[in-house]
Image (cartoon, rainbow over all chains, first blue to last red; front, side):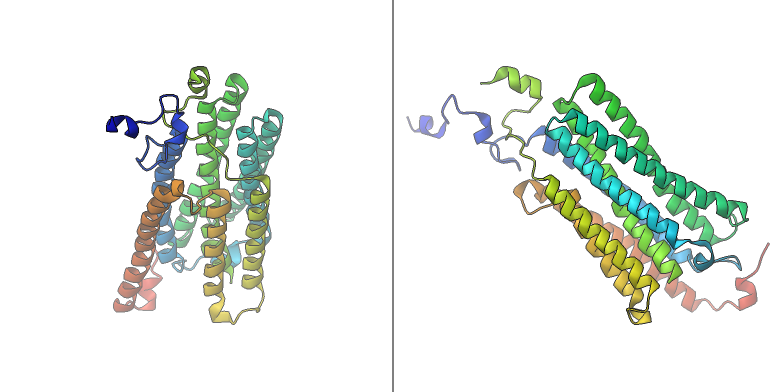
Amino acid sequence: MTVATINTRPGAAPSTLARGRGAGGPAPKRTVVAYGFWIFILSDMVMFSALFAAYAVLAGSTAGGPSGVQLFSLRSVFVETMCLLLSSYTCGLGALSAERRQLGRFLLLAAITFVLGVVFLFIEYTEFAGMVARGDGPARSAFLSSFFTLVGTHGAHVATGLVWLIYLVAQVVAKGLRAAVLRRLLCWSLFWHALDIVWVGVLTLVYLMGVA
Amino acid sequence: MEGRESAFDDRTPGVEDHEPTASYVSYTVGVGLAILATIASFVVSQTDLLWAPGIPVGLLVLAIAQIGVHLVFFLHLGSGSESTNNILALAFGVIIVLLVIGGSVWIIANLDANTMLTPDVMNMKH
């Protein structure tokens, strides 16, 4: 008799019970997937922190070579920053359109995100190629070794994100905006936003403090 | 109980319907604040708006503010119960990052100060 009062109505939808954090049933798969991917992103941040630490320690060790003041062009860095920031914006809007099952708008925003990412990588490649051509490559000094490692690793992440975006758009086109595809899109957008956070660190520590 | 839909929607049992917390407006506010912080960083580093020795501190404050904007408006870390775990994990990550960066800089600066190298040794080339 008393037991029956504890049980919920037989017809009650599980959605009225779930509260996450173990109470009332397991958390939504979407929440679990995002949490797991968030852990990966944080571990990636820890890896970047080691590269940042190496750069912070070696920034003054120019071995008689050029320092940041001579090497960095803040104008192109500003364009790079804006590209990445706006691509983060369009990525967020794209993920939102996907949630709302607006396929055409999602594809358009994904295309804009991709183009902005490519422009960022192109500017970075031009900067690197120019430095190497002038003989200021990673072998020149400890400062330049750590600079190329830190900024290059960020660039490699951006390139990976772009390849991943192509793969996901192909999935959306082939499979439609179903729940599993939406979860992968969520992970990708977390990755892309996290790269923008790393770039804030690169911009501040490497470029702005290097030139100021 | 909506068997077809739950199979199609690929949900685990006991799932709340997902309501997006974000909106086009919140992303637009976020990107606006982020662009403002970026422009402020460039202005601070390129002009003498701030007292010169205070510029790194100003840049650091702006960077932390911008990271906060990204976390709240783009990554949606809010005060809701569903982001408790994410925020705890973030707090742990922040501790590790601060330990690695702060610890390295501190230790190496200490080593630098206690190692008496003459300038010609410092600039020695192979």
